[in-house]
Image 1 (spheres, rainbow, N blue to C red):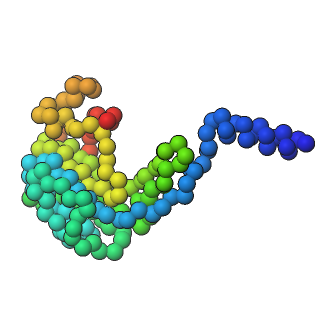
Image 2: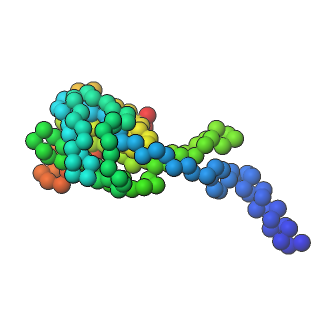
Image 3: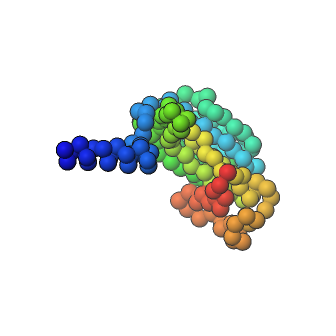
Length: 170
């Protein structure tokens, strides 16, 4: 009787609060590398140390058409002088999605890196593109009018770029 009562209470709580576990099983997504170069400079896309694509200013490729080596991938974007602008590691199983549940909700996961530079925004992703408002720099502003009045910091001298996005809401 006590076990029945505990089971009934647990059922009522889960029904009232929603399911505590995903309602569908994650499905591995195709490992497709994509890039959006919102900067004013050409950017080299390197995978495992080899440049696989040169992306013109304002260029967009979803997915990158160049053949990719086997996973894992060490992905970098580089300026024309060879400076590393962004980097990420992509492993097998990093990208997945779920089918919509009865309420229409679903989930997706992928790898991504974003960097806001003085010359524009650079996004690289696997599977799911990043959301968010356009950067203030895309609008020609030095600071975000909707956020703190903080000037954009300069890039670090070494070790890649630091991605900053004061605007996180769509």
